[in-house]
Length: 293
Ligand code: ATP
Image (tube, rainbow, N blue to C red; front, side, top):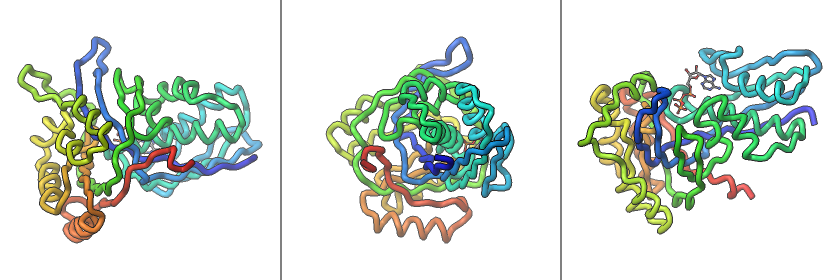
């Protein structure tokens, strides 16, 4: 086999809690992750010439060693000890710097693709040990589905899959620095932490309604104040029929959960027409790896 194409799935956080800041500067988190069927496509070709060449459809993405696909491929080839080279086509569909783990997911999919291409037979756990060197979200992106993510994001427990629904995403045209959000998060006594246990129970009960009523992201305490567009989108989504709306990760993408696909489509058209909320607007659904069989 000389070539392989793999998909890299976006993720949202159904719940995001930050427990404490650690002495090493990282934060201990407790998050409920969900993968979406929105995905990038990565095609990897083996070449006889040394080096990794990346081509991408987005002119503003790095195509050198700063691209996470490059980092993942370099790490894999070094682990294998091969001098072979690769050409990699990266077709981006996941919005960049959006809180949807696009880069981490590309890195994870690259590791999965290379594991198949070279028939190395590394287990999920072995790939995750490699992946965590590239980023805290990479181990989850290798696993996908509905999962609890703890530690800095690398301690993973599969959860009961999220009930079916339609998910609308709007990325406002602002850039929000993850570093800024974490540095400005004030973990005071009075801060309300998301009820992750209640969310887990709602998942077990396959109760989408209760799940949406308990979903929360503690990082919103920073971003909603500083970027009013985020709360404007959240409110509009609810007005348009979303059971709930939430910022994903450290933002700025806002997603709304719809039980009714027709309502979600109407909301999609609304946001496509009113572009001051953000030009990147998508509909998606939860993705569960086992569904592919
Ligand atoms: P997270 O949700 O994990 O915080 P994100 O969705 O906010 O991630 P990414 O889309 O992963 O952010 O991009 C963050 C930065 O990483 C961008 O500024 C981009 O230049 C860089 N980057 C490197 N490789 C990639 C890639 N393959 N896809 C997207 N961004 C990449």
